[in-house]
Amino acid sequence: MSNSIGIYIHIPFCRAKCFYCDFNSFACRDELVPAYFNALKKEILLYSEKLKGFSIKSVFIGGGTPSAVDEHYIYEVISLLDSEFSLDERVEISIETNPGTLTKEKLELYKAVGINRLSIGLQAWQDQILKSLGRIHTAKEFEQNITLAKKIGFNNINVDLIFGIPGQTLEDWIETLKHVVALEPQHLSCYSLKIEEGTVFGNSLEKGELVPIEDEIDREMYSFCKDYLSIKGYKHYEISNFAKPGLECRHNMVYWKAEEYVGLGAGAHSYFKGLRFNNISDIESYIDGIYYNKVITENIEVINSKESMAEFMLLGLRLIDGVCMEEFKSRFNEEIYNIYGNQIGKMQEKGFLIVRDGKIALSTIGLDYANQVFMEFI
Ligand code: SF4
Image (cartoon, rainbow, N blue to C red; front, side):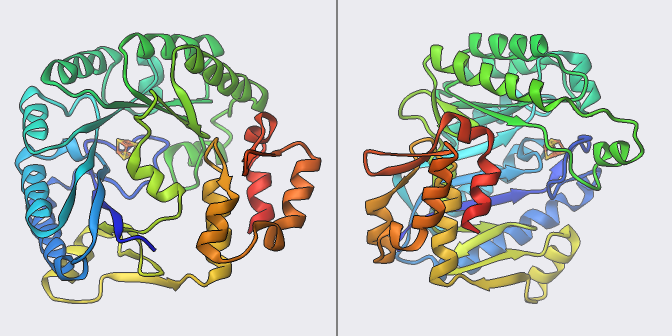
């Protein structure tokens, strides 16, 4: 394994809980913010020994809504990372933000501390759809935020969008994409809405109060998105992600290439030294655990070579370029066909996988049946 890794920092605070959200995020827990950041800084210090000799290629501050907390917390965390770890000179430092929580002061301080990639959660252009999702902002606020961020000098901006929302029409989705692309972000993440159990949407679905969008419309939305963004110069590089050439998210590439990373903060996941594990997700237990030197990691799993190969396939096939056969061989000292020849053949026959230029990738139809393909490699 390379000694270059990614760092994920989890900020679990949000202004309100969106109706579709099953992330480890909490609204109205602001009283815990100071203690949380003290714990987070302590966890960074605990890792400074363990990460000696590693070069940090990416830092991703996610959540939750990192922009919901006062900017000095973010400043302190990044300054500490910089002093304790060896950040690559080309390190990508991303922060997730949401309209309704961003200000000029925040953006200026993010820029000053070295954040060079901004991700803004918009989801949809229509205010009534934003309301139906439980979002706290309007499209206008998003527009003001992105315009200001560009003015302050951010030139690597991602916008998060969702399609397949109950009540959303294809026209709404087209309008969303057109308005967002006109604002010239460098990166777009376009996810099809998944209704998860235990969320407001999940509960409404169970009670029969929510009508999910038809599969056919969802696929039409995806298809339009791929075609339109390609015409507009975005490279489709992962099932749900599009970027201007050279501006693919380096941190997410760490995940998709099944490389190692360390996650810090409540509920953060890590893949480090051949182990997968996560921190406990409850904020108070995390703070308490760090303060009193208790064990805060759980679900520790040794990834054996069979699992490691399966992960390499599952994650790598998410990339439009697919899995490189040579890379598989140099990583596992095995020919990919010796291990997965049957699965690859079967999926090729169905037309879901294509083999080209030493790579195995999802076909255009395969993109719509990705889960079926992934199941073959589990
Ligand atoms: S802002 Fe993001 S993390 Fe927070 S509740 Fe909404 S979807 Fe979840």
